[in-house]
Length: 377
Image 1: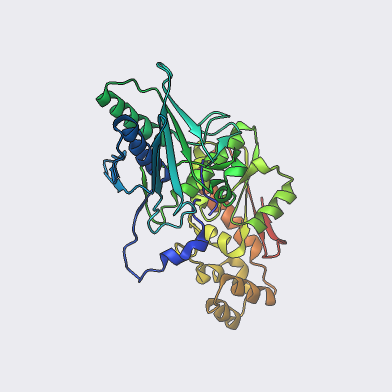
Image 2: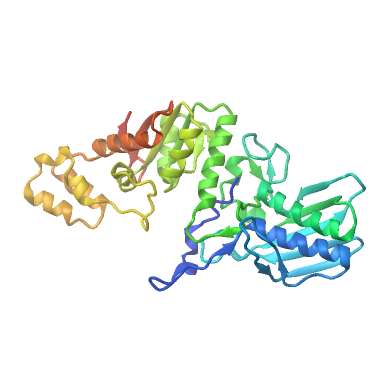
């Protein structure tokens, strides 16, 4: 599960990333860590009558962050605590959201029960780490909250029979910016996190979403899936192959994350679709296709066998082009079509990552209007 469409990582939030070159990026805390801290504060208040503020928790790798409470309330046997999520310098759609935990005691032998409050989604499709009908609170955050509750109840000498409702005001609107609806997580966001820490540009949430998309597709019996770099190429390739929504994997720039997971969890057929520049990077062997992490090598394009017929002047123009698209246009103006060569090499690059996994691969390159300019099978 993930809240990533821009995976929990919308790049429109670049204003938080405008730091001087070389300046260190600040780490943040996952939604799961915030939910755990809020639950600890609420549970402590339910037992003692007092909210710890700040509240400190221990994360799976030993870090002990402290969280200030944004809201607190205690009455009628119900305790509520809320924490504003700080994602650090990571472009995270849930940065600034308030994660609220509401706890109340249950009858003996009820155990610990998790409930999706307003803004937290519910699982509606198989293939995710949680069953259909479960609140979208991932296993590790559940484990963290369970450990906190059991420790506090043990100290107080009471049984750990507790209902925990996690809410994120505005979460349903934020979830529309994520992949949750496609994954069958409806009604809001997912409570995520395996380490509790958000590392800037780790892109873990996006890759997590890719993995869960593959799990859902496999559980649904899909034999053909599509990973695209963007919505234009995705729509074109989906129509070309007549694929259902469940077959669509939001690969984005993370070709490596898609291919490596498919290698271990194969689907019989994979289509990769994208624009010329992105798939040129894949053809070069790049696994992360984002502009900040890989670049098109114009010399790579000029060295393609199809370019042998170019004049020295045309080669020089290509080598000095500002973009891959400009190099493509220069070649086209000289009756050289780079698309098929790049698509074929991108396909070979994908197959090399898949190794001997039983997956057939085709690659579709589209222009910005969605027209197919190359198809390698």
